[in-house]
Length: 474
Image 1 (cartoon, rainbow, N blue to C red):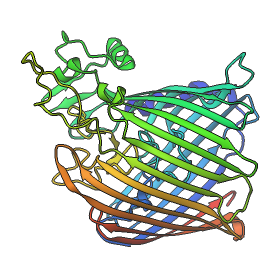
Image 2 (image 1 turned 180 degrees about the horizontal axis):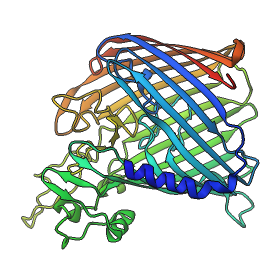
Image 3 (image 1 turned 90 degrees about the horizontal axis):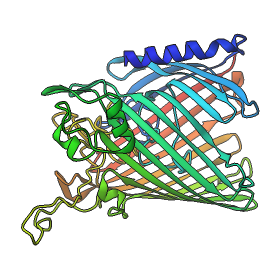
């Protein structure tokens, strides 16, 4: 983590001198409190909050921010954000929630630091979250280069657009692994241009790699040759004594990918979006043997302002198939030899990176795959619930000066293939949020949320959350 901070600081220091006349920053201060009963705070209080809010039943927080956003109308511009978070939930915690600098050069962006990011083709405010990189965990320190917005492909009369990027990041250290790196690249194409229907396809590739194992102690490959293997999803060098057997038999590092299919229909007053996000972690997933799994959604958005119902979302989430379970009997071929046919994709878990696809104890991907901070057992050493079937509804709108949001999620949770819960634990999670906007003095926004969990996975949790946010000069 110290290395990531130093590299990002150097990047910002080198890049930003050309902007000597720094514009006046924007300032916001947000503060809130959660009071709830039960073992945890209600699910939709802490989920998809970029790790800002505690999972503990009672907490308070303060989040001041100094920032500048990038202008859409300028070809060359910059942005930055410094947001320290102070939180108390039985023990005090303070850390830099966001700290980044970003430079825009035409349609290319360079970013260094920890930034709240949005990936995927799902609804931006009502979704359960992108299947692999939701808004659930804290921002991760990264160096990134990319084209984050759809940009026309030359000589296609703007009917074909693309976006994409690549980044290198740093995971947090834990008792099992240290100095682990992130590799991420993505690419999208969208067809449609000025037509009322747009079709898109996107591909994401994530990998955890490098670092060291503490039991037994071993430094994992992290040189240029290893990066090439990670970039291409290839197996490690079997002649390298630092390469574990599993990583030269399979791929070097812990790889995750998603294919994202989308369709947008622009009507006169409404925009309808359909999306499917499929997940793969090995060859069986890439071969669509887990085609039943993924996030399937429909979003309906009004183009008119101040509507009573401005957005509605329905999503179906399934991660129970996992390319089937490994069946050793079926894997014995007629020639008498054993061949592993795949299956038991065991989403977000890995035998070398024990904490799996999580950051600071929270699932990086869709939060319906339960975070280690919630299901700890005797220790919080892996993802304990990754076989989930869920129905999710979301709605939002404006009633006079009250902006509201409603979320309801019903899920059946089957544990993992190694430690299954065959009957499935039920869970109902509810959020009712109301925010007073544009009528309070001093640019204040006041928000009140009611949350509830009813079921067997998270237990019975009921809570209220109050927050106030001020924007502008004090």
